[in-house]
Length: 453
Image (cartoon, rainbow, N blue to C red):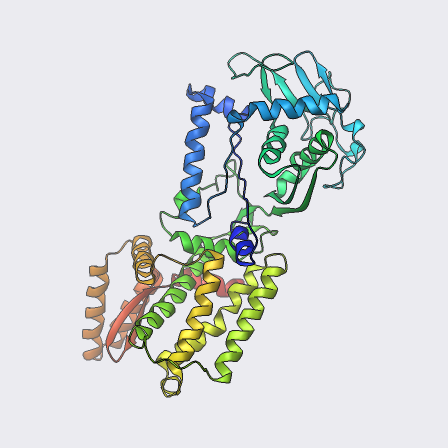
């Protein structure tokens, strides 16, 4: 949902986006102890790496980025309020939320209390009044960081952190809360319970949950050995190709990661930027004297694209439909720029300018606009060369060999050179001006794609 903020701003909303970091929890502490590292220091390193990844993907920075370790007073104050309101109880140095005292528990996930069996996503602890009760405060243990509190030294439970930090910056009622589908229960269910227990007026208007990432239709996990990081992907693919790939699936559905789908996204974004780069070159020669009017057929393409964009984005941020709708305006531009019929159109340049403008505006809202088309195209070429394990000089040499073979009417050799390059994702394009190359889906993956359909 890394495009939501831009779209809301496009609609004219003032957006306050809070992205909180949990820098104190069981897994972090366990990992820090393994590495003999301070947990807060370890968390800071991972947080910094995450921020860099989001910058590469052109995600807008949040308005505020709170961390648990900086907000202990807010967390402790909220726990006090929950205890005072009769929704929590103390056991030794721990504080637990009492789910039985909150009748609305389960309103988000649809689960009933009897569905929550001990040991299934809820910690087994005989001191609890109900197995589904969850920790608001955990007493200090050896080798763990701790803070002083009215219940003794300790640290917060996972769920309370998010409620306290969102309340600190957004208040108890706000518009949108996002997260992964796996957080619906117990995390977000517990957030609702404890926030409402602290303040009866607490409310979130919309809960937005994104689907999981699968790899070749299998769930991504370290145990299956199919786990990879954003940084590993953008080492071979342009970050905006990855962004386009992610937007190709509606956010609520699982995203199936595969080489062929990422190659397809990379090829598609090259086509988009090449078309707009060609626009830029033509329009730079006609920056004055453009007429206001454009022909009805071009206006129809523009209006349809605008309507598809507005309707689809307003329908639960349906980005796949918007990306598909790009095809018509892009094709119209290429027809106007490169076909004999298009070049004869009286208001050709005006049409190209209007089409380029609306495509650019939509790409900006989607966070898909590069710093420059030419720079992005060069980066896409370089990454294609890297994946193909070739240099541009080597490709130019192959183009020269192919040209020589064609002159000698050795079409078998000519076709073999073209196919050899196609196998590794390099497509050759012949024109009256000579032969050029562009990144493409490697031939074996294209064949795999055809077989799958």
